[in-house]
Amino acid sequence: MSACSIALTPANPSRRGRSKVKTGCRTCKARKVKCDERFPACHRCVSTGRVCDGYGIWGGGGNSYGERYAKAQSNSPPDSSTLTVPIVPRVSSRPGLSNASERAYFDWFHGQSAGKWPGIFGSGFWDTLVLQASVSEPAILHAVLALSCAHRSSSIAGSTRRSLTSASPDKHEQFCLRQYSSAISGLKPHFMSNSKASIRVALIACIVFTCLEFVRGHYQTGKNHFYNGLRLLGQLRVLSGNAHLTECPSMSKSEQSVDNWLAEQFARLHLQARLFGQKPISSPTATPERFPVQPVSFNSPSHARKCLDQLISKTSALAERHRASRPHTLPSADTLQQQARIQHALAAWLSAYEASATPAVKRDIVSAMGYKILHSYYLVAHVTASTCLRLDGEMAFDCFTDDFRTIMRNSFQLGEIVFNDGPGTKWEHNPAVPPIVADMGWITPLYFVALKCRVREVRMEAVRFLEHGDCKEGIWDAALAASVAREVMAVEEEGLGRADSVGCGKAEMDEEEAKMPPERNRIHDVEIVLPEGPEGELGIVCKRRVGEGQVETIERYRDAISRKWSGRKV
Image 1 (cartoon, rainbow, N blue to C red):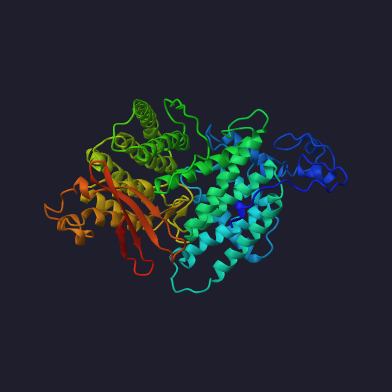
Image 2 (tube, rainbow, N blue to C red):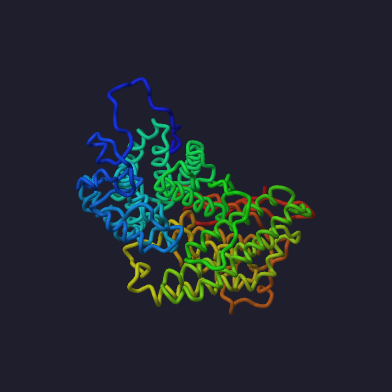
């Protein structure tokens, strides 16, 4: 049972004692005086010259680093990632680091990993909340140490590609497991409470545990943590009386920031899983049906990404609903209207993107990389929205070869940006920091091209790009995605006389090989069965049309040792 699956139950009410100060900053609690709970630092502490120790993971505090908080607020752009919780104190002042190994791993996460780990778009959850929570919550501190160890050791010892003959964990894995266990033990007091604060701590831990397992290659365990976190998120909604975890008059600004960051991170992980061929589950943020009005321009890549994420989610939901009903019949008028609204919103997003991207990319590498990635994701959503209701099946994708080529061009240009402008920035290649991030990047669009583009030249470019990437983005693993894409190609080209030429370049293909496979060969609805650990079995479950309104299900599995695929038709 994962830590986050333990039911939250009310604390034992029978034990009675002296009255305690239950709210306020930590300094006032320790002094057992009433706190005015001003943010970021209470007036009672500041007016008497004391240092306000803040409000736990909800931030706050002054005089020691209050000035940095004010500076961060004044310099931050009006963006969704603007911090309302102060910057965390210096690492040297952190409590709870009991030995040199813990200090070394925390220093590495704080100094080396944390800059790249959130991804190109940043994240209030990773940039602020996790580090802030590790100050006051031992469970989160141990979870961060476990994640830092797994992340760092993936480059030191190649733990994510560890030899299958390794019978016992090495010293890095042992440290990781000890911290993991300590984190779970540290959560037990929170599982005895039904308070919003305890649920928030558990949710932070769930996300860290999920990413930890993805880094280790234990995808099924990571998914279990994530699904349990979604259930806890539902409990938080009920307790907060806030169905969408948005602004609520009864909540403080710091609480709203924390809840928004939690909801955003779960929504991002949820979207990653859907795009990576995982079975859809209920939305973690209960997004309303209404379409948000697209702005004329975006003030940052993060702003553009937030708007696009909502449209990608709606596009995926439309495609999934249609597949689950009667995919080979004419869609209803309501379904067609929903498609038209999505396409209209995507067109509005593209207009705002074009007004924002060109001037922004000249300013800094983050804008250049962010907008380039977003354009590829827009094309994925555009192609999906345009094809998901068509009756000609996979043949519908043949009309979008130019879009597939644009995704490939964006990917190559992204590499050029990193190569030319990365040196001297945190995006410069550093062998000490593994190419692993928690957020989306270039893998998803390339995988989409590898599955849906049947122009072999373009398709093979996407597969090779994935194979040479050797990186991870959340649940996405470039090596696994490349292996699945190659097998999909092999299944579609079976019987066409070119199954043995999957690895050939363009120059080696004759005119017959360059032809695209017919509809009867093409597969769709590719669901990936992710392995549980480096020694686990990778699988795919997909479908193929065999007649008018008839489909066959195909299952394929890759042996963990031989790396060879085999399977059967169901």
